[in-house]
Length: 355
Ligand SMILES: [Fe+2]
Ligand SMILES: [Fe+2]
Image 1 (spheres, rainbow, N blue to C red):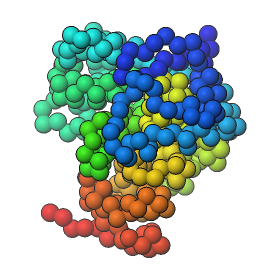
Image 2: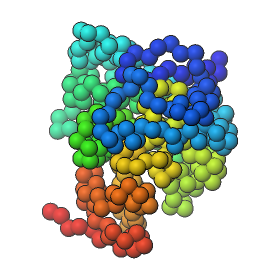
Image 3: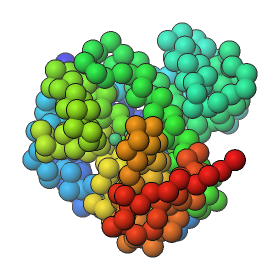
């Protein structure tokens, strides 16, 4: 059976209903105006920013993009919604749902237990004492973040066996955990809206899963892309664009559309490297993920002595938010100050001396 037919179950805050739609149907839906609105069970966010972000109009263009469709057609192995995730959603839909039961469900799945504990005990969470039991992990994370982590853990487990030169599964999920934590922090800082922040967390966790797909399906080519990006000191997404005329970001947004994720999360995944292609008019989940991801790249560049601003200045300028960049960097644990003139940014960085 083709993976097109297998990888399709909607993801929302209620147990997924059986679906006969496949990813191809999702791509067709993307081309239909208004088809990317949040599913009925999707997390709600009350802020103005959230409603602006969830218009979802920007990613419709992906469904009409020949290059994205061509790349999708080369994906023989596609992600499916982790079974444990759907079980947990079913449990949470019951009136007598309990965190304890969620913890017990996870502990019945040894591979997921190991991966969740590995993630929770990673540097991204900076726990003073390691967590040893899934129950403890659920209590520490809370229900919403546990659900998101189950998605990422399940996805990484599905593709762990694939080998691609230069690609590290662990590095990918470590990066995703850091970006998700920062995106959540930024969203909270900006909107004070807890639901909105949890959606930013989910988007941050999933923003790079397109890389998993490319590494698993086109391992040789993708290994060369990674190598080329490293040699040229440019982002992997730039080389992807040159080779495929599409990126891991667009690929993942298309694939995950079949899961019924809210449009604001799909927007964030699709445009995290090119936020100006969205139709944002205010701070959105995309803004949070784009900034969190950009700051992670700035940190890497800084270590290599090559620091330049990685945030999309024209995009932030169009939202009237350029003045926030230094406080956002600080919120992401990177107290580096950038001068506000974009023309001078490539040479005009000055690091704040803090403690
Ligand atoms: Fe990315
Ligand atoms: Fe990333």
